[in-house]
Structures are given as structure tokens and as C-alpha cells.
Image (cartoon, rainbow, N blue to C red; front, side, top):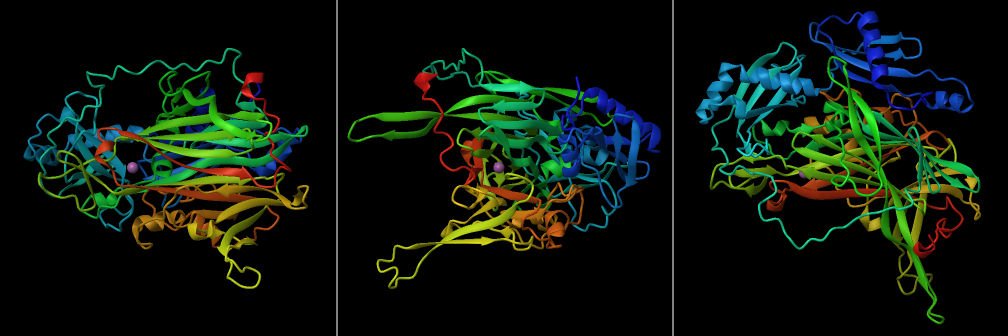
Amino acid sequence: MTKHPLDPLTASEIQLAVRVVRDKSGLDHTGWFETVTLDEPDRTERQAQRNSETVARRAYVCCYEPSSNRTLRGTVCLDHGKLLQWEHVEGAQARIVSDEFDAGDRIVKADPRFREACVRRGITDLDTVLVETWAAGNFGDGDEEGRRIAYCHCWVINDAGDNRYGRPIGKLHPVVDLQSGKVVRIDDFGVVPLPPDTASIRPVQNLREDLKRIDITQPDGPSFEVDGYHVKWQRWQVRVGYNLREGLVLHDIGYRDGGRVRPIMHRASMAEMVVPYGDPSPGNFRRNAFDTGEYGIGPALDSLKLGCDCLGHIHYFDVCSHDWHGTPHEIENAVCMHEEDFGLLWKHTDAQTGKMRAVRSRRLVISTIATIGNYVYGFFWYFYQDGKIGVEVKATGIPFPSAIAPGEESAFGAIIAPGIESHVHQHVFSFRFDMCVDGDRNSVEEVEFEAAPVGPDNPHGNAIRILERQLTSERQAQREIDTSRARYWKITNPGRKNRFGKPTAYKLAPGANALPLLDPQSPVAKRAGFMFRHFWATRYAPDELYPAGWFPNQSTGGGGLPEWSAADRPLSDTDVVAWYTLNFHHLPRPEDWPVQPVVYADFHWMPDGFFDENPALDVPPNDQL
Ligand code: CO
């Protein structure tokens, strides 16, 4: 089958790319593979491909070479098996991969200082201990400078064997050099008693008995059509994609209207995330997980199960990840796609005649779930019949637990179980949208409102002024939500007008959100500058993909969005990329233990003058299906 230039890499393509790099790049025998993933064609190449020109398939490959402590990267032409480009990225550290987690666990357990520290805590069987090698960040520690460092957190696996995070070992943090495979030091800040409970998350004995079955049936099959990774559903068209770093990526999002598909977004993804924890105590100030840029969402995707993760008629997409040898690893059922009934779409009852018309809403759901250590993130994309696009994060799993001595109060968190505190933190996601509302030339607008002063034009003080302004350059387009002004942003096409002569547009409608509660000069704030604005817009550039830069692991910061937008490139009638920062603030509750009920955080893109009227008037009522 001919592959589309945006189809995820197959196992054989990963093998080919690995072979080419091994043979041609000069990587020595110690080198291993951080990333082998699709090198996507840029906007110019996509245009050529739409004009039926052939576009070669390429792989992006990033390696780490322990013998030289170098991170190297390049691209491979998969059609001709050629190394196109190869470079050493000065000062960069590759992501931490899961094989390094296993290696780190072994390295630490082999160190006598660690064994002694465990014995001091009454732990003699190291097989019951879990050591996690977290990215160390960059705190200017001379010991760590220029080395590939991981900062570890430790647990005793519970007796039931179903909660590896149930019994945190307090204040014990081995520091590992992943390059040399040696323990640099053991940060031991004092013994804290092990939490007494085993925190089993197995189903309890007495399951409730008053729950009746619910079945979702679609006797006529689903309403979507799938061709490889291309999907048509109702008026929507979208292409499902995947990469090692971001996991699920959506391409070529468009809406069929009057016989043609009107483009809206070239590409949409969750491009970076960071979870800064708010406990300043020794060791714990290190906890700032960039799950995308430091570890990668792609390899962490779950294989989803019908009836558990998903209900109804599901179409699953498989994707291909790999280990550090570059051996491909198929993740079956990594992406779930199905339709959902979503309550009312619209309704009107005529009071005089009693005539009622009600139409139910259906949405297409494309989703993935990533398990990253203790935490679980669902990334859900929704397409609605009225042209709306929803983006939702679902957070579940186990809140990060720390041991606390009996009787002590949690200073920067909450006691959530006997002997366990969980610290206040924020989950901050950066979504990237490569926009093409009705075509490639777009502009950016801000809309907000204010109460007009009382005066001759506003005698009763009820007037609400609508303030619309263009954000004409990148520095202007760095904005925060303001609930006192009901602020939002629009991506418009000045060259395409609706029937009222206004540019066609999509609006970014924020939902619940927060701002970072960090000193802007703190090390994590410098590495994640993107989180200080809810909205950013930048001029499209092919390599500006990740808002904390390409290599956040151990970086000193400043890269990504703050750096690119300092150029202050103009944003009118041009190639626009919109970025949205979604922050949810989390002080764990007792009810979040031992496993947290899903917390939802979301926002929407809505057509705003993109259509001339409600585009869903033609959706048939359910009784006419
Ligand atoms: Co949380």
C-alpha cells in the first residue's frame, strides 16, 4: 500500500532508519536511539504533494552516544535508504527513555550506599524497592554540570503487588550519572517512617450490586469512513498521526461545506507539558516533569481495551514505537476513534402550536491514554456537527505520594492517606495549532468586553462594549485570560469573507485555567517560559514545534516560544501558528487516593462567522435515522 507522507512510521521503516544511522552516521557501538519517528513534510512540501508531486518519506532520528556524552540527530530518506543530515547538538541531552529507567533502577540497587540507606529504614529486600530515574532539571549544581544526570525517587512496592507507588521512601534520592552508569551521590535527608497501609487499588471485595448493564449498540455500523489514517465523519475530514514525542497528532483538519473541504488546521498536537511541584524541601524541589520533552508521550501510550477504556463501535489505530536499540515495538490499539451521543445539539418548541424540534448531538472522539509512571493522562479530541472542535485532558492515576512522619502537618501539600502527603502542583499543557482557516493566510484577533460608562448613550448603565483588535506581531500576541473582560482570541482569514463581509474565523474559547504560581526566575520557570501566557501566536517555521525547545532535558531554559517570539515577526495575513496553555492546579484530596477519579480540563475551537448560519440545521432528528 502506498503510504501517505504523514502516515506514522512502520516497523520496517524504523528498522531501515536505524540501519542507515548505524552504517552511515559514525555513531559508535555505545550509541542508542532516543527517537526514530516520522520527519514530517513542512508546509511547502505538503503543498507540492497536494499538487501531485512526490514527497519522499523521511525519518527523524535522535541518538545518545554514552562514550562521548553526545546527543546526535539527523534525517534519513526512507525511499532511498540515505542519511540526509547528521549533527552533534552541542550541549543537548537526549530525552530519558524507559530503558534508562530500568538501567537506573539496577545501577542504584547495586550501590552499597543505597543499600545502607535502605537498611537504615528497615528495608532489606531490594526486590521490593522501585527506583525511578527522573529528569534532573538544571539547578546549577557543579557536580552535575555537563553530565547525563537523573534524580531518583524511591518506593516500596506494596504487598498486594498492585501499587508500586503505595509506600514512598521519604527523603531518599539517589543521583545517577546515566552516561557512566554510576551513582554520583545519595541524597539522604533523614529517615521517615514507611507509610503503614499498602494502598491496594485492586477491586474491593464488596462491589456494589445495584448497577445494571449499559450497552452502546450501533446496529448499522459507525458513521465514519476510514482509509488508512484518513478519516471522514459527517462533514469533517482529519488525518490521524503519531510521533514519539507528542503521541497523537492530528493533520489536515477540514470541514466539507458546499461541495468543497474548507481547511481549518494543518496540524494540532499537545506539544509540551510540565508539572511543577510546589514543595521546596530538599530533593522535592526537583520535581518538574516535562512528560513530552523529557520522556516522550509516544512510547507511553496504552494499548486500549474495548469495554474498559472505550465503549461502542471503535476503530483502533496501531502505532509503532521502539526501544533504545531501535527495535520496533508495535502498540496495538494506541489510538481510539468512535462516535458518542452528546445530548442535545439544538431545540425549539413553538409555544403557540406546541410543535417541537429537537436534534441530538453526535461527536467523533479521537483519543489516546498515556501511562507515565504513577500518572495517567488521556488526550481527547472531539469533533462536533456544528463545526466545534473540543480538546480535553483527562488526568487520573496515582497522585505523587511522599512519606510524612506521623503527627506532622503537610507544609506544601495535603495528607491524603496515613503517613502520606501529596504536594500541591500544576499540570501545564501547551497545545500547538498550525492554522489554515480557509487557507494559509491568516490573522490574529483578540476580542474582549467592558462595561460602558453611564452617559447619554448609556443612561441605564447596561451597555457592554465589544472591543476587537488585531494582534499584528508576535510580542502583541502573548496574552492571558481575563475573566473580567471575557477575553478570547480568533484566527481569521482576511481574504475570505462571510455573507456579512467579515473575515471567516475560528475562535479559541478558553475553559477553566490557571496561571503559574512560580517565581519567573526560578529554574523551572526559565525552562518552561511558555506557561506564563495562555495564548501565543507565532509565524509558522518548520522547526518551531516544541514550546520548551527541542531538548528541555537538563536545559538552562529560555528556548522555545519565548525565544522564537522575541523576533516579533509580523502576524497579519500570513502563516499563523496558535498556541494555548492549559493549566490545572491540583492540591490532591483524600479522595484522590489510592487512585484518582478522572479530572477533566478542556477548551474549544468554535467557528465564529466561518459559516453563514448554524451549520447543523441539516442534522436529522434521531427518530428519522
Ligand atoms: Co495532579
